[in-house]
Image (tube, rainbow, N blue to C red):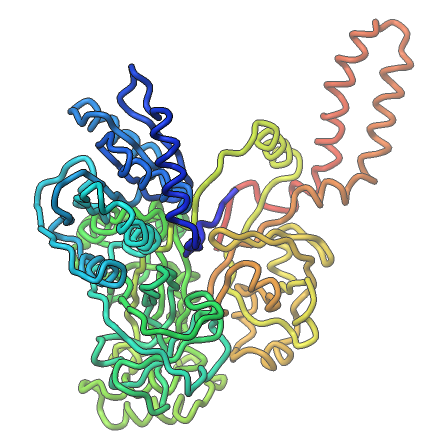
Length: 615
């Protein structure tokens, strides 16, 4: 089970009252036993707060913040090398992604690692709440709470000022997860336009800005940015789009969903924007046959080590020109001896298809086309070819193989074939250990029914399906999954799952009514998902890749009819033989009934390959 960590916590109005209650509780009793050195409060947030102090003001501060934010809290009587080792083990065992230390000191201040770039944000927050800039220092020395490979900060707080730092630390606890992805870009202040609305509803996390602002902030179309409300600490990860609307300097337009999550019913306020961490790759090559079968992503050894240092279990690979993307697990990364270029990546055929690289894209946004045509290496005829193919919002028509090769050659020269790798919001992926009963059930279902899953690209459904709870797959895709029409499948995207019935997708013209698709070949790697299910899965836009898995429980129930007669026959045979004792009969039933089920379900099991496959 995967649980979602909220991107913002509600700031309670009675936070100071809670602080006073916790302080009163600490006066009456100690939270650390006389023989203990550490008191631990477990949480679900990937942030650990460490307080090496017994002062009741700082302890009340920590407990209050832990109750609101649900972070991990560790209170320590005395800091020793043994305790530091214990903290390090706890960080590793609980996948802690960020740290905050709180120490007692006569003078307020904070300390951060030399490679942390969010300290201006801390100053911004403290100024909002305390009306002063808190002194800060830089260090290159790691300790119990300052880590080079994790966003971390250590606060020094005068015990009499503990309540003043409540909103500061709470806001920091809420924004620290944005830094987990190793964002290095500075935060930029921006105003939110009330005069304009976004040009399109989708994606739901849409942010629009002028070309001048986009170039000033060194952003590209489809780039990810974090948008933060510094007053409440609420943030959203948004996708950048260029607009022709006349906006002021450093002014942006936010979609309604983003506004609601940042401001609620309050009036819009200035926000802070930070470019998400990304790793660019400029050369895309094909893989060897052995890597294709293993579904790997091949990069240089240096790039692989760089991505692994982020400690993000998932990476999103995106085409920055069309926004098409898919996630892959860090374990799928591989390096090839001899590949030393950090800007080269090797993808298999289906991965290139997912990213609109194998064939010329069906559509190129006008703003992206303008950037491609400005490439100085293009000749005038090559610029005319791109403009005649994609200019004025044109959609690619069916072209011959030779024409496709020529167009790909020009696109490559224009710089179309490069990609970005983004560390995924992995703090939204918290695996929960399944119960013993659930694990046994899954193993039995896999043994008797067989599991099969495919990665497929999300497109819009037929117009008539938009309000329904059905998805559409092509006949060949259903055959690969070993299912039929009206069967149930399980859809998964990051931290969300949904069940839906399946119908066949066989009409390209109906798909063209709601999608840009020039060839029916793309239908075989696509799944048509209505907006209700897309919203439930947390899909802000189409063009993303999700996991489609056949529902083994449904298939077991569906095939009860073919199991009934054999089971009855086995039971009748065993019970009718008088030479067996009661215990012998029970043992024979326990043996032959599952065997009978296994044999009768062979058709369902062998409708798929024995080997695990995925696109």
